[in-house]
Image (cartoon, rainbow, N blue to C red; front, side, top):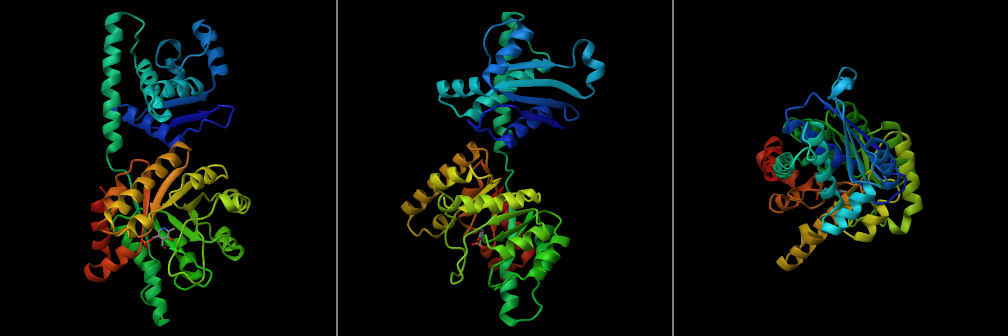
Length: 389
Ligand code: PXP
């Protein structure tokens, strides 16, 4: 069910999350049994909306949403599977969201549902009875949309670094992170993560190159913004890279990136990666300032550092850290970033993080590898997946 999405909003703000809009449209098509149909969505500003409103409805000023059906009248033959266009004014939507004290994305959902119902034949201007029928259907669909969205869609990406840690402890060939990655994928992991460190203490160049050939899901290369590793990444072309701060003496990645303090450098690395078709994620603490900075330098994703939440020993501290993660995920999502999270997650603390609607993917390594020693890797991955759904 292709969604034709075009954002013609001429200014930078307010930001909208394309994947949220696409997902809403896909759910609406699925809910009404129209999975074969196509839907076009166009985002504009008030000025463009006023022009359209004037041309097509002979009305002055902007409106929030217009729907142009292609399944009625003469266009039917030409339209193929295209149901029609929904045009939304982001300026009006943002004003309405502020007035209703809701988020921009909640308002966009409402407008998409309204426009979609017009496309499939509802018309509130026909009569009072028809207006009532449409309002009721709108309410039902918003409820169904909410239920669908709350179904787990989060993915697990397994970090296999510590398979290589064990191998390097002996300096021989076993165990092999490449084989381990295949087992994780067979067990249901939807991504494999490896951190190629400057000191090559676990993952080696050979692992990254072989994984590029064998990973069937998604290979995420974690790396410091170091010129030698950047060169390798541009050559290997993983499905995405996650930039992390790296200190030689640390046991594991200790904190998030200071995006605010090195915007120029990170922007340059992101540009190089994007030019090679590689999306970039920035590993950052759940800090609103860092999230805002990540949104301005071209990152596609942020990965929110869950280490302090995972390490918290007192309940009060844990609650505080969880609230920071939840707020950071929401802020990043609203800023149009895709959101992942990870570090220190285990079989006790993951479910809560997995329940946050704006997080797409969790990156988990140490806890899964530890459990794998006792129950086997396949089972360890399946048990983690069960906790996330
Ligand atoms: N995400 C990032 C950016 C990391 O550096 C790590 C550790 O390698 C992880 C996730 C996974 O953390 P853990 O091994 O504690 O699950």
